[in-house]
Image (cartoon, rainbow, N blue to C red; front, side, top):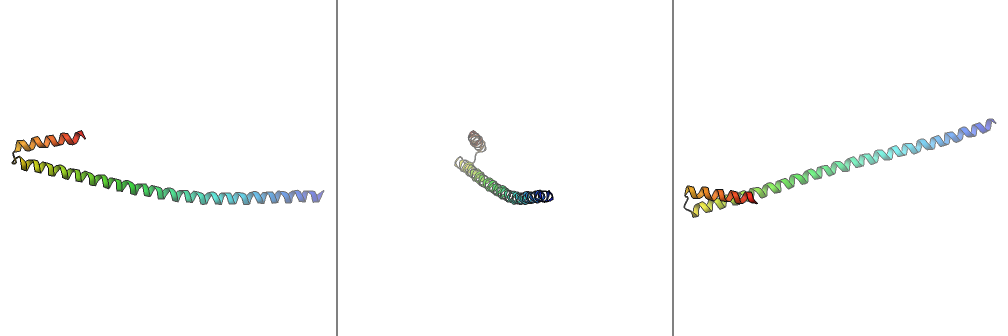
Amino acid sequence: MLSRHTRLGLRTKFILSLVLVTAGLTCGTLFVVMRSAEAQMQREIEEGARNAILSFRVVEQQQQMALGRKADLLAIMAYIRNGEASTIRTATCLCLRIARAR
């Protein structure tokens, strides 16, 4: 009878040790996966921020180019019409209406 209780105790100890090892490996694996996911997420956030900044700079540059073209157009119109103030105002209003319509 005593040996039977000893076997049961050994089985219990063996099963308990397997459970503890499995739990330890599971926790370790989850920790490593969590760290990898955090690192990947951080890289994606940084890449998204860089892309947003680059996109903003491109849009800003295009806007500056468009404004430069409008200024050139106004200057040419003023030159063609001999610099009359009323004609320049009319041309400016016309260009602004065209720009807003787009």
